[in-house]
Image 1 (cartoon, rainbow, N blue to C red):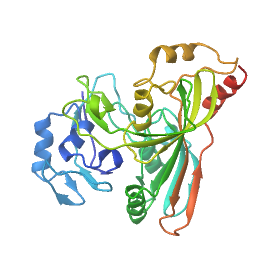
Image 2 (cartoon, rainbow, N blue to C red):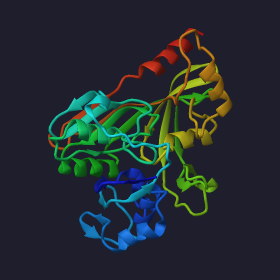
Image 3 (cartoon, rainbow, N blue to C red):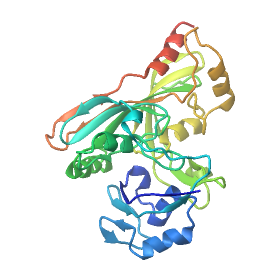
Image 4 (cartoon, helix red, strand yellow):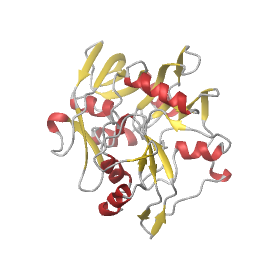
Amino acid sequence: MQSITLITKECVQEDGNDQRIDNFLFKRFRTVPKNHLYQLIRSGQVRVNGKRINASYRLQLGDMVRIPPVKIETKDAFNRTAITRANFFSFTTLYEDDAVLVIDKPSGMAVHGGSNISFGVIEQLRAQNPSWKFLELVHRLDRETSGVLLLAKKRNALVELHRQIREGLVEKHYLVLVKGKWQNAKQHVKLALDKYVTASGERRVAIASNAHPSSKPMSAHSIFKLDKSWGDFSLLDAEIKTGRTHQIRVHLAYIGFPILGDDKYGNFEVNKQLAKAEIGGRSKLTRMFLHAHSLQITHPVSGQRINLHSPLSSDLQKFIDGLDKL
């Protein structure tokens, strides 16, 4: 079965920074023959910032990639659903003005559509607000991560916010619950990361020294502070100085403190037990305990420093309440 994508434009985020355009396309269109994607590049149908590029072009943060219609082979069982009012999702808005939009992203929803995902946050918001001429993600959150998500409603706002990210002027904090008794009040982790794709097509990240031979190391810096602990569980505040794919998850797993509920890098036996057992008579944990709880930016228009905050989602709060009763 085939489906055809429409012409789209995608703004390059941190996880695509310095990535070759051909690899960028391979990741998004895994079922499309590579020679066809190369032909789209050579013919000028794929453009970056309105200009023709070659396959070795390395994308930069904020680049706008034009992706032409592409025929995608899909499984017969998969039917891409159209976005209609009947399946609109009601997002909680944390902040909004003419330049920026900040929402509280729920766990389980991807920030954008892709392989086996009909539509994500960005497609939903564009469909719900057809009068908006511009709307782009400023950064991304993993599908299972909940919390603060920042979007730009103007091109100049996007450019300015990306400048702040590049220059380390954006402060991002997450709440994360890990397996293990955390000892240090504050700990810096500076371990370079590599991205690669497994033989089955799954995107993975590893510490550079353990990475796939074809990947390229990226510097990564996380700061962890102990918030609270219960026996062999520890609640941490995680501040990321770099926004690499799966950064918090891989850093914590590598140093021996896997995130509870993490189905890629976590302790699978512990996850299985927590998904079954009632904790303190309150709640099971059936997803990854990672929540983007605060984001500080300088407003791209007013220049005012603003702090955006999302309370811990109800399912994670119930789990914490159960630990408090132990």
